Length: 72
Picture 1 (spheres, rainbow, N blue to C red):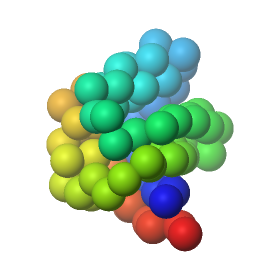
Picture 2 (picture 1 turned 60 degrees about the vertical axis):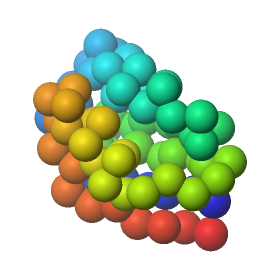
Picture 3 (picture 1 turned 45 degrees about the horizontal axis):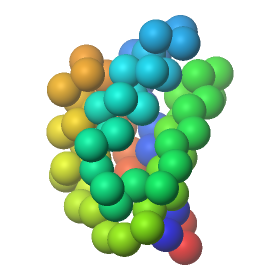
């Protein structure tokens, strides 16, 4: 399963690291890719993880999650 997110406020590699580190504790996540220019985060899941947990984890790092879209 894959989720695509629109995340506002990311501007540098430190932001990429913060987002990835914020999601690192979730064993359900297999991979995280961040595209700064497009303000997109792509998450590949091994198993289901709620959008709310993902949103809170990224927002705790100081970024705004605008949209979460499931892509199967």
